[in-house]
Length: 96
Image 1 (spheres, helix red, strand yellow):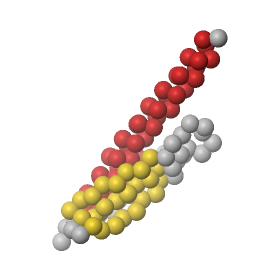
Image 2 (spheres, rainbow, N blue to C red):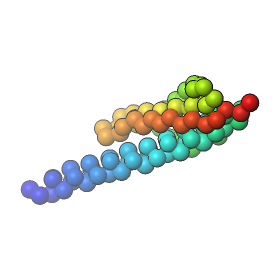
Image 3 (tube, helix red, strand yellow):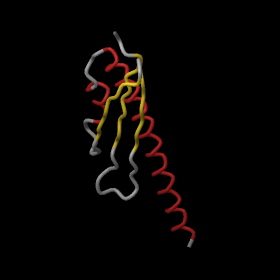
Image 4 (cartoon, one colour):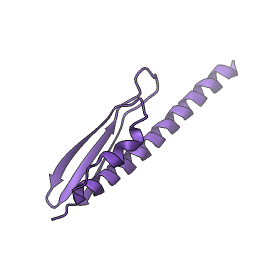
């Protein structure tokens, strides 16, 4: 009777850990992409870490006064019950 509860708790902990790791990766990627875009470089290098992932990655760019902001969104894994989206926005001072 205790085993199903322990199993459910373990699944919840692992799903939470997966969400935290995905969020950290998206925050790091958005910061790197903002720095690259602010210099006028392509952002593909910052998003390359997700190339082998089964998850879809999208990004958008917008200007806020002197800053260039990049938003990166990592969609949930398709077909996985406990997979969550992650999104982060980072800004960098635009060159020129």
